[in-house]
Amino acid sequence: MDARDGDRELKVVLEGQYKTAYELLEDAVAVGLTPIVIGPPGVGKSLLVRKFARDTGRAFHEVFFDELLRPSYLIGTFNPAIVLQRGYCAEAFEKGPLITTMEEGGVFLAQELNRASEFCQNSLLEPLEERSYYIPRIGRVHADERFVFIATANPAELAGTHRFSEALRDRLRVWIPLTYPDRETELKIIRVNCEPLTLAEDVLEKIYNVVEMARKEKELEMSVSIRAGIAIARLSARHLSKHGSIGNDDIAAYARSVILGAARGKKWLDLEKTLDDVIRGAMRAYG
Image (cartoon, rainbow, N blue to C red; front, side, top):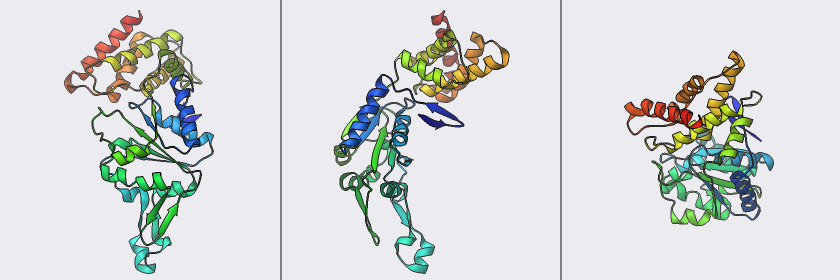
């Protein structure tokens, strides 16, 4: 299955933790339980949900939650111009993505749900528990039987996250953890997402070493995602197709450009030096 990543498509590799997570996602939905996928940014949480939506033939809608998001965006609002002309009628109500997905019987993905305020979190209780929502002046909207609500969340230690309200936590029944994949799986993910271009195994190993060491570097506040490895590999493969060869300096230059935008340093002025040290160390470690 493919999921959009800019102008290219990312291929999902259903192996290891991803196979386990996908099967648990299927099982949760099949028995009517609400799943939430937990993990750091860039481990493939949303890709897994998109794959599920496509595999089951459901429409897919997603909303990125933050503390500024209000329930009215999810549910919908009345169009003032139509209200003036026709009053508070169904035609005057402009449905939000949650109500739209409920009626379509699609998959609604609540991205980074633990960044939402408690006020916004609590607006989801009725759709999750009753599979319906009461809209004043319109009446109760009932979800299609195929409607699925799935959430993702980042680890609590990341900045900008909130605790889930007890009421919402009680309705998120199945918790599916994801972390960075093992070496073999991540290398396969990078490899298949370079196609139709190819890279030698030693080049892929060097790219993985850079990504892995960047994740372990304490001076970098944000872990480097799988997408970073894919981006470095794509640039390296492009270089190889143009020039016929690629050296360590070329790989290092691409890695520096990609990771510079993907990670933050505790001291911004030292970030470039930290990255250079990480990349040199990764190259030396590979030999």
